[in-house]
Image (cartoon, rainbow, N blue to C red; front, side, top):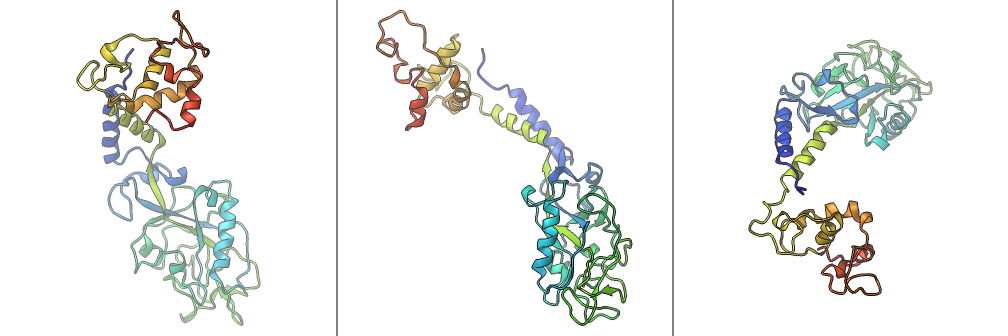
Length: 339
């Protein structure tokens, strides 16, 4: 029996890398981004989508809240709570943080969501259907018109109401701009709203607002997510890596005399595993000894013996006595002799 991983696996890994170079075998974090969305170039970079690229999701909340708080953290916590309860697997337990697309008098929406185009060009933004693009980058988000309205909720349902934003169309707070009302938490003036069925008025509609004491929906934006290799690709890469660990040709230079692979000698499963357990030389097979023996440790059983035995049933002249089956777990639990 040959105790090595075929070099063919390594060649498969090379093929995978070649596919990666062509933009194949990748997916978005969370598994929501559709293959169609990953076809062609990343709109934020102008180059083919690749592992490590970023993107973001946005949603229209399925329920409503007041806009009476001046603390932007109140709104961030609320949209995070909705994302955590989503059946789409987009919450904190899935490793995703969300922020409200809204402005208070102290914080602009583009800074709260880290989408300020004067700071970075950013990432493409999609709806939670995984294919509809809202904006190609941060400049596109705040240029006065998005490509598609943010009209899908964290539940995946369509909703087109009048979200509280308190925000001007460039991502800054609404107050101070002609036709604008108040920011989130404003008193004595209505809080400015957007219109979710519009692409040009999505975040700011002239003279449109409601008192902050009323209940209205909001928009939410995820943190940047990453493009990753497909799970099948990762498996092949791991196997390819194992192929590179295959041991040298049997009986060649560097193989110790007590190696269980010496000269290709046929051995039973027990003697093979026992040989690995007692093997402590520089032989390259030591690299794989733990990986092989641990899964089979429960299969070890007393070796057949016809010679004189001690009280534990081991031959007095056995070279494997120090690592006798039945004592293996005790040895491993202490300072393991495998290393």
